[in-house]
Length: 256
Image: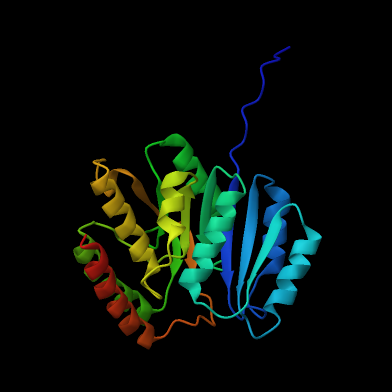
């Protein structure tokens, strides 16, 4: 009889930022995933919602108290700060990997496991990023206007960062827990809308100052098998203009 000990399964903690999501939050899908995958926990951040979001999150927390934590911010601070505070709490929980996901689950939770598998196989990586690439055999459903505006923004971001990144704005990211990731989220972001870009700018700067190989060797984009543009998104055309201002602020602050 084989008595060799089984290897420990890596633990992950995923942050879900929420603002007025009471009518869109797919609680049943979260519960099903939690029950099927005991190695993944969640931190839900209520960003000062004005509807019943916090009550809904508290009910999830009561149903699965060992797996779900709710962080309630006293007022709306914006997605960037909600994610930052949630990530710091997740890092304090002792997980091997921490990340954040959009509350509407445009990216299915199953992709968390794919990201973990990638980071487990490649210890040099600090970050796995979902990429919404339209390919045969994949289900990427995105409104045409958002797609083309997104491609223009992605080109500007890649040029500003000096990094050949395809999709910084996909709301599915997983980081290796540790001092590198903690430093990325230690200070508040200068960007309110394009904070995903600022995370990469911080990583690029920190690796350059430490004399480490460039960020290209520590980041991997993962083409998603599925991404569905869920109705009710709060992102509008004006937000792309705000993101452009953010990009200028990031460039000025980090000179990447």
